[in-house]
Length: 318
Image 1 (cartoon, rainbow, N blue to C red):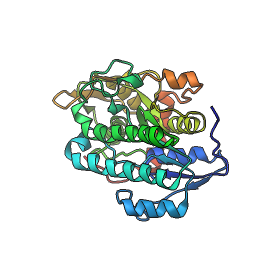
Image 2 (image 1 turned 180 degrees about the vertical axis):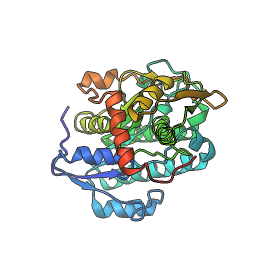
Image 3 (image 1 turned 90 degrees about the horizontal axis):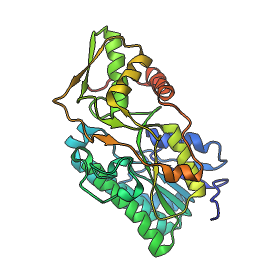
Image 4 (image 1 turned 30 degrees about the vertical axis):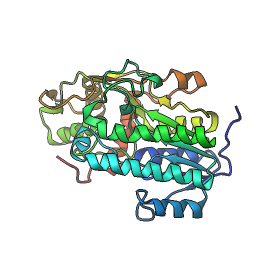
């Protein structure tokens, strides 16, 4: 298999202002390529004509699709139309136009929530579409699955080198720290920080604390994405995980230690837990020679440092 070189190429990172897109841009700095970017005010990705016009003018040779409407359990539950319709439009417009203008290589980024609620653990790529989804994030999952299939379809019918990667739960610089729409780890950082600042005796967390989750530092994901873009070319999507999981209680204890919150951790079991366990089987990627470099505590410390410097004073949800 011939390696794909990014050197000297025009590379579009769709969603460069998001956590994942920002990390990919940072990683591409070492690849000697021209990084193309477009803000939402410059380009509405849900409008097909706009996407076609922009891509035809900029002529990207490689594309990372990191643009998406994302959020945690609460956001998925209260904004199902946004999670379903906007994500379908974004990925369809970019993938279809990439074919139309002859993009050399494209990577679609999905999410581990595409797998069934009761998928075998760890979840292999083959578990896709083998059972019912987790209801708390089904809208996002239902939107992401067609993106994988679309890349496969263009590869099969037109020979396009379009690939897909499925990351596990991500965290790090540029994360969403708004409690009304954030994922569990940034939410824990905000809650611990506020509890420490207020001198609270306890911090209450959603759910039982028993579900198990895998967390990958976002710059490690970006490294894996560039690795796959350069070395992988096949129909199957590729899982990108850390390789081990922890309970929500355990990650909350690490966050409290990093933040310096000395109080107790309490759990509101009336709130939903989500999937009981979500660990990716990353054996396929590991066998290609890629492994993550950032440990969980080290990564949380980096994420907390970024939060303190960039987001701690910003207004967030309650």
